[in-house]
Image (cartoon, rainbow, N blue to C red):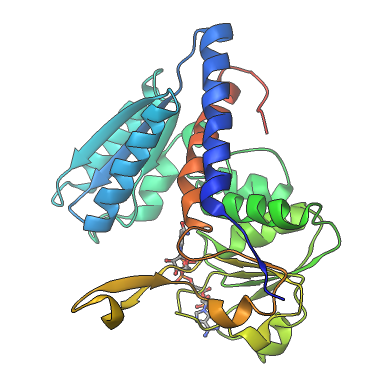
Length: 296
Ligand code: NDP
C-alpha cells in the first residue's frame, strides 16, 4: 500500500484563507490592517523570488506589504538603521530580513536588532527562548509548517516518537522543540549520529532537514510512519532537456512512499507552508502588539 500524500499546497491555501479572515476581522473590529516589512539586501535570484512571493501573498491576504530592496554594498550600519526605523514604525507589525545576507554583514547582530514583538521569522533569541520554555510567541515559519502538516496527517501527536534529522537553528532545533511541546518523544539526529538508519526506523514521525538529496532511503522508514521532508535540493534533470533541473527532498520519495503511512512531496509539501505561516505570524504579531489574544 502506498502512503497518503500530504498536500502542503492545499493546507497552505487553507491557512492563507484563515489569515485573510482574521485580517478582515482585525479591520472590522479594531480598525487595524497588519503590515509586513520585507528587507532584501543584494541580488540573490532565489531570494528575489521569495521576497516577491511574500509581498504578493501579503497583499492577497489583505495586509500591507512594505518592501525594502537594498544593494549588495549596503553597510551593516545602514541595515541596522533601517531595522531601527521599522521597529519604531507603528504601521509595521512584522519585519523579515531575507537570508542569506552578504558576508560583510553580521546576521546575528541584525536578527538581534529586530524588535522581538515584530520578529515574524521567529529567529530572535527571545522568541527562540520562548519555544524552549513552551510559551506562546512568534515561531519560525518552516518548523511551524512541519508541525501543522504532521497534525493534518495523524491528528494528535502526543506520545509519538519523532526523529528529527538535522539540528540547524532555522529548522531542526525549533522543529524538535515544537514537537516536544506537542508531547512527542523526540530524538534529534545530526552528522555525528551513529547508525542513523536504525534510529530513523524507530520514528512514528520522521522529519528530514538535512540538505542532502534523497539521503533517507525507503528502508529507513518504519511502516506506516509520517514522513515530513523539509529538504529542497536542485538536481540535474536530463529527462526534461538540456540544462534543466528539478527539485528533490532529503527523502528518497519513490521508495519511502511504499512504506510510509503519510509523506510530504517535494515540491508541494513543506515549502508552500513557509509563507503561509509567515502571514499567520504577522497577524499574531499585530494582535499581540495591541494586547489582543493570538488566534491559533
Ligand atoms: P543546515 O545545513 O543548516 O543543517 C543541516 C543539518 O543536517 C545539520 O544539523 C547537519 O548536522 C545535518 N546533517 C548533515 N549531513 C548529515 C548526515 N549525513 N547525517 C545526518 N545529519 C546530517 O540546513 P537547514 O536546516 O537550513 O536546511 C535543511 C534543508 O531544508 C535544506 O535542504 C534546505 O534547503 C531546506 N529548507 C527548506 C525550507 C522550506 O521552506 N521548505 C526552509 C529552510 C530550509 P551537523 O549539525 O552535525 O552539521
